[in-house]
Amino acid sequence: MTFEYAPAPESTAVVKLKPEYGLFINGKFVPAKDGKSFATINPSNEQHLAKVAYASEADVNKAVAAANEAYKKIWSKMPASERGKYLFRIARILQERAREFAVLESMDNGKPIRETRDVDIPLAAAHFFYHAGWADKLEHAGMGSNPKPHGVVGQIIPWNFPLLMLSWKIAPALATGNTVVLKPAETTPLTALLFAEVCQQAGLPAGVVNIVTGDGKTGSLIVNHKDIQKIAFTGSTAVGKGIARAIAGTKKAATLELGGKGANIVFEDAPIDETVEGIINGIFFNQGHVCCAGSRLLVQENIQEELLEKLKRRMALIRVGDPLDKNTDLGAINSAAQLAKIRELVDSGDAEGAERWSPACDLPAKGFWYPPTFFTGVTQANRIAREEIFGPVLSVISFRTPQEAIEKANNTPFGLSAGIWTDKGSRILWTAKHLKAGVIWANTFNKFDPASPFGGYKESGWGREGGRHGLAAYLKGVH
Ligand code: NAD
Image 1 (tube, protein in one colour):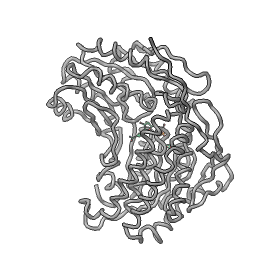
Image 2 (spheres, rainbow, N blue to C red):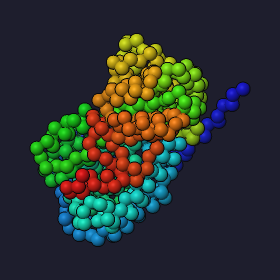
Image 3 (tube, helix red, strand yellow):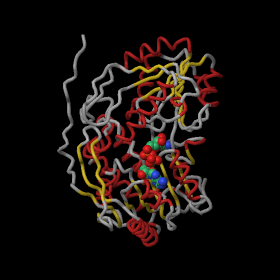
Image 4 (cartoon, rainbow, N blue to C red):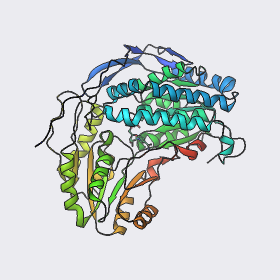
């Protein structure tokens, strides 16, 4: 007998949407100079949420000038302990307004409220708390006795974890004494603009944080601005490569957090039920819109059949639907464009001869949706084994020996994450030592902590975010 879940929708009353949002420059919301704007919608039902100002060159110049002024006159002169107090204040306000942020993030992004409430927002606050503590201890962090900030930092973030990626960027930048111009992704600007209100509420001096909304063109204005000393970018490898080319030969510092195609490796002695949960979390968390997703399942051949049977049974229980329903596991795909990209890659998997499986599931009629899916019979040459799908689609590949698992796991242009599932500690250590990935989880997956550095090898990026290594990226001449 199966029990149906009664709907448990979260109320949206806590969110006060404005019809229009300006750019946040020098502590105030201002319209774009040429009056341009764009719309942001709820991807789960295609409803219009708000109009958002579109920043062109004059606006980016104004934001950079405000950040420069704030850096020279206020932020670089302020005692570090005072800087830290602002970060503590922001962290506490994020906690106090957590529900508002969680609901707004679900509305603008399409991710389930269960995730925004339990992961995105608490982790964003944790990043501010963690970095607040560092602000007045930098000279004890092993980076020299007088570490210096870069000055004005340009930050560009993607749509998959809007507030969390903002906190990964802004918290270390401010803790180390930089001022910032940040651009959220065009499909998810609303929590960054709510964060701007938090900066006002915290009494953060004007110009220390500036938020400009727009698309890739706005992003490239930030990248190429002569008064920006460092670029921190999170997004696709293609755009990251373009940024690397644009700043080559300049004195700009850069961190690039790019794509991934993580291998989740299951050995024959793995605890099978826990592993199934780890696979689910690895690929279906956040609709698979996760750079470090375990999107390639490498399973030892002799347990593949049993594992896939259990995985199918578990996948059939995934609840897909309204992101604001507290029971929902898998929410909406963030945009029509991302849905088209997922479909295109899935079609290539079909055409290249892999075998596709999804549980029966009713997808809502409006909005952008994709069912949880896996492919078997995948070869290493298939596009679904090589390219980042960035959706709820898993490619299953088998192996016979640990050596073969390593060769297959490392056979990718990326190197962001990996998972290892086994009963033996020695096998965990041996496997981790041979994997070329920046983050490796053992008998767990997608665990994040502000104290732990995160970043990739190869085409997954340059530099680290989080922990002491992440601080170094915001200090001049420290690597
Ligand atoms: P994207 O590269 O298209 O866009 C990311 C951001 O860059 C957006 O704000 C966009 O407006 C801006 N942008 C686009 N073109 C630009 C240009 N020419 N110059 C400057 N800025 C530009 O990526 P996306 O589709 O929004 O995000 C998904 C990608 O992000 C995936 O590849 C994912 O793996 C990656 N990602 C990586 C990490 C990580 O930490 N490694 C974390 C999250 C997401």
